[in-house]
Length: 205
Image 1 (cartoon, rainbow, N blue to C red):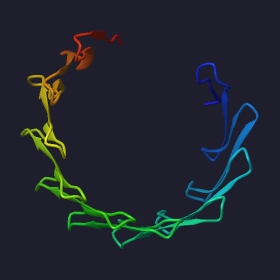
Image 2: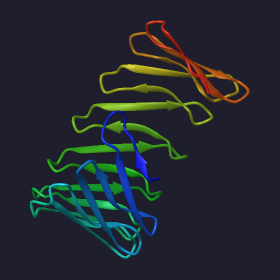
Image 3: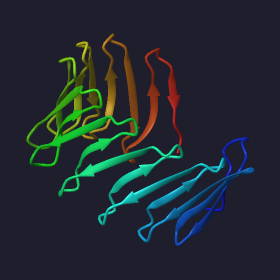
Image 4: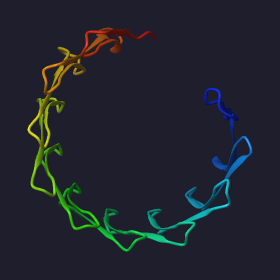
């Protein structure tokens, strides 16, 4: 890749070193990147000369980010490689907990608000308990596809799937409106979308 032209905007050009982007240019603006032997960015300089630095542990996990204003964000990992804490630049702390299968079961934000997650035996998310006690819930079919989502206000969105394809064919919104999908049964490609207003859009490949 030499240059990317995003519409009528200035072209974006890239310079590489050892397979990684070292310099990115868009018009007169230049971003520079320094990396470690693993290819992780250790220093980033934006077009205004602001520098952000990153440090990593032996596993390649991000340990700290130093921002241009000299503030620092630190990340804490357990021996299993799971993120268990973040110390934010403002001094706030976020905490994360996991079950024995490595699934996140709780997240506490910097204000002490706790969000909890419940999973089934095969690793599907079943319920999210929000800090105020409200819940979101998901249901699945035998193939692991989501068939219903209930939000914290009790509104339910349902999903139906094309016979034998396991591809979503219809989304039924809480207000009863529907979004429909149609496929090429041979190539399993999405060929038409019909929105809630009945407008149809064809997709060609």
